[in-house]
Length: 261
Image (cartoon, rainbow, N blue to C red; front, side, top):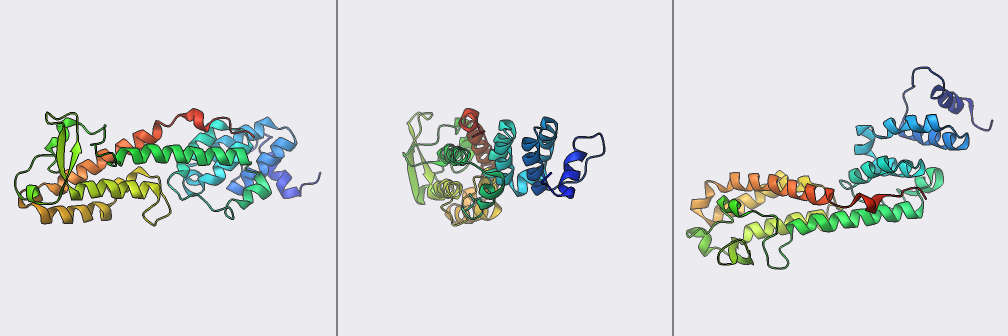
């Protein structure tokens, strides 16, 4: 056999009924190669649970995606593709190991890029005010929030933006510019235009530094709203995070199917 003894030893331990050894992500790749070479479906199937380990999915989801594509595990590849969204897309140099060892083929890479694009479009659409409308998912009962209410105190004198909203009697609502700026800021972060490399992570809506800046600006605008804007913005940030997560999850899984090249 062409393989060194330590590699074959590892391989045989996943064939015979002995305790499984501790393996790394690199070991999984080697074992998947051997399982294909020697037509060992049992070894391949036992790698599934190892690929789905939370540590691997969080630390190196691109590698898990590549290995899942190589092993023809579309379910694992979909899970890994979802985890890649929280990280900037790797450079060609960072992906080079896939071409040399486990071969992330062009089709699988294109599918991942397309999946990320569709997810980005869906997530950014949640925050977008570009068409001059209140986002469709915002509920009328949320007018309890000070930035969606018709405050006649300091807010009325502050810089505001008029948006169309079919759920109100007048068909429009005036919102403070600080709230519109917050929505734009979250959208830029999701698109990667905030200088941080692009993290399609719904939690950017609740990042304390982001919310704190908006709160500080809001408290300067209106004395009446200053007492509740902290709680209102924190609650809304949580709602926005859920809306972004739902939008990403709505991206059709068929767009990420058929991973085997």
